[in-house]
Image (cartoon, rainbow, N blue to C red):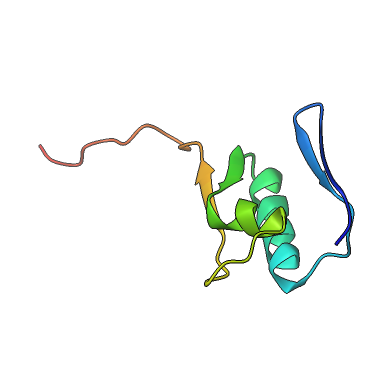
Amino acid sequence: MGGIELRDGTLLVDREPNDLDELAILFSTLLDQIGIGHVFISGYVAILTGRARATEDIESCSRALHPTKSTSS
């Protein structure tokens, strides 16, 4: 596995992306294109930094697009 470095608030991973990484990159790109701020959290971050996990999933946290409006009268 390549090196991992945190530089200016960005985690840099020096290795070829795997299938899970490609999915995360695609998801992140789509959210960026529509202006949704987001971060990856939990299991995927552990996998990204080289930890073994029983499951391979991607959790994210994103900003709400609009405040929730009540539809009741």
